[in-house]
Amino acid sequence: MVFKSLRRAMGVGGPTVDTVLENPVTRPGEVLGGAVRLTGGERGVEIERIVLTLVTRAGARTVELTQQEVGGGFRLPAGVSHEVPMRLMVPLNTPVTHVYGERVPGLAVGVRTDLEVAFAVDPGDLDPVAVHPLPAEAAALEAFRALGFRLKSADVSQVFEFWVAPQYQDVTTEVAVGFTTGADEVELVLDGRLRTRHERREQVDWAAQVDRLMRQIGHIRQ
Image 1 (cartoon, rainbow, N blue to C red):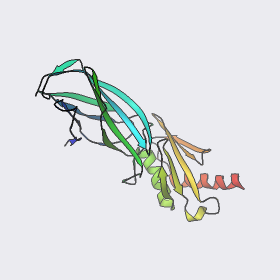
Image 2: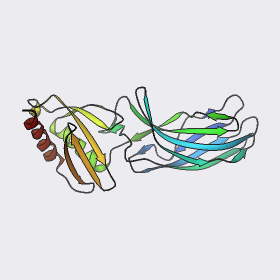
Image 3: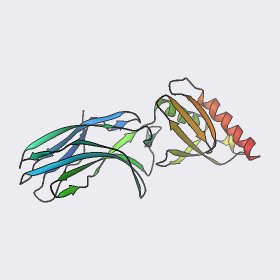
Image 4: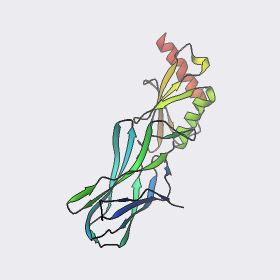
């Protein structure tokens, strides 16, 4: 099954561009596959470059995460279709857009396809991508929910804001939760200063870890 973006044309009589993702659901560290499909317009054009950019947006802020040139250097005749395969790595620092199976409000990630033809550049639209947390991060986030925390917001720096669970109300009313994920390890950062680091494949009692860190916050703030 493939998932298509909206087709768009480069001006009146220009070629159309249709970026197709095999699956728009991904995780940091995975690869987005698919194809860029071009259809010539009323006249032939020289396709100089086809560039894919993974972009994240939060409100008015836009951050380019990675970029890959996937083709170019050919002529697209009028009315002729041409397909260019694409593969785009999703970096480990890509913000998670979906938590607990639901989209985080105000945060978006997508693939932008920029088409450069002779003497013109088409600034591509954004094809949305749903980024879910890695298994270790998902387990940690699930522990917060199990303890009674409520997700408030998240931003492009991948910091989650939670309303704290009732049992910690004497410590604080809200807390910031961040992750630093590498190839082999994941680090959970609470309140910007308390950390716990584990192997990504390690079986961790995340509820116990969160409880321990929350009680440390209480001692620090006393």
